[in-house]
Image 1 (cartoon, rainbow, N blue to C red):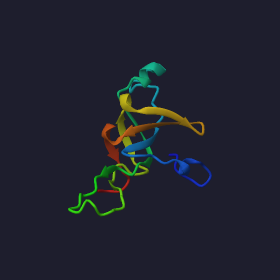
Image 2 (image 1 turned 180 degrees about the vertical axis):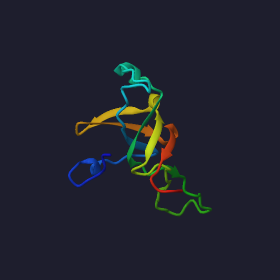
Image 3 (image 1 turned 120 degrees about the vertical axis):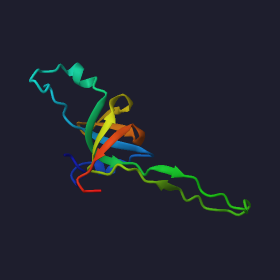
Image 4 (image 1 turned 90 degrees about the vertical axis):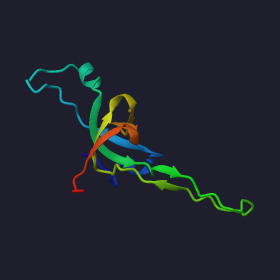
Length: 124
């Protein structure tokens, strides 16, 4: 798995909102019976899996309205965190993924709602 290290530039990336940066796993080019699949079949799979590299801050929560609207208040944005965490393995819908290439590596960005299931190393 590719992670954030001091020698790569992934630590400079900031994922916004409810989005998750995923490094897709290499798709198997064989079926269980041993037949080789062409790349077009592998790309059209609806559900893909990959490693969660970075996650956004989450869903913004609106500030409670005060009874005295004439007072000046500072806008402190609070977020509801996402369920996905760095290092998880995510099953996500391919059709809603945005593919990108960064530092010569393939990644996808998906919204939290497009992730179907997470696999985590630690027990719940």
